[in-house]
Length: 85
Image (cartoon, rainbow, N blue to C red; front, side, top):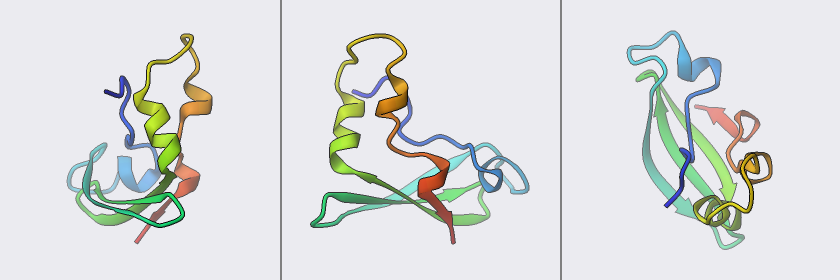
């Protein structure tokens, strides 16, 4: 089990200007043959978004960490990987 959220509200359209600010609502995932995972989610109850990550990175997030503070290399989903639709 992952000790940290795989996806958390950070981008401006996820944290402000909506009906439910600071909230995201994952709705579905698609696993591509390349190992890329597409995660569709709603943000702030106003936009539909897409986050992408590689399956290997998501699995690493769920494994125990070697040392505290190793979050940087495990962070699979960053605001740069997200797009609002």
